[in-house]
Image 1: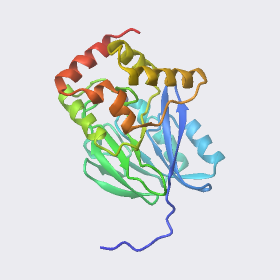
Image 2 (image 1 turned 90 degrees about the horizontal axis):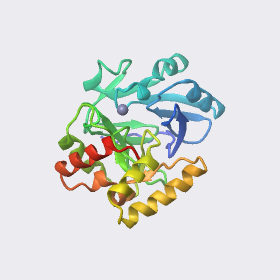
Image 3 (image 1 turned 135 degrees about the horizontal axis):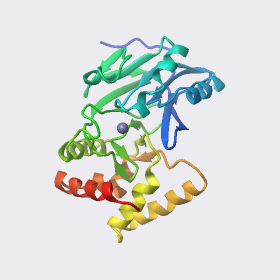
Image 4 (image 1 turned 180 degrees about the vertical axis):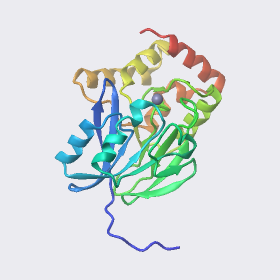
Length: 257
Ligand SMILES: [Zn+2]
């Protein structure tokens, strides 16, 4: 069925709000004033302040997984914007309360004039999902991948297997190269220091480490990354098999760098 044309604005900007020690809360929005969507709100206060300063109205909250530093701010955000939708994995309803819309891998839904595609990416947790927005409004597309894919790294395997994480990362790596990758933590410097120790002759990794350290020196975020950059410099994405990923994950878990 052909959808009727609407005046819905296309949200093409993603802003990040640094919270806690190394979390990011992401905001998808368009012009201000206008509607906004928040991804993985660890806390509420800085998010409320940030949105109000910009006259942005919260219309939806997306959750990638159930860990508290990804859902902790939701109850208070809903007190402030009771009409906001809460979208998360329907398989994790018991651990992600307040859902108004449960989703699973393969689902698509519309948000702020964009189509959002849900991708199942288990490994870090059993029901972890990612949200992919294809290019629109002149941007390169966006991926919100929670704690599955990090810049230069991947999440710890708390509930999943190396096989699951390998498959999850390969699915994300198959997205278009220019896709902007919004990982939920600022772990890039540590990940690349480890990767440079693991693969000391790898030029692409050492160059990215240099760029990353310069950004952190100026207290700048290292995100977004891109799928192309992760394909080139992320050892977990480059792992050719679950066995290689298992080996790398074991090294990283023990690394004290
Ligand atoms: Zn987590």
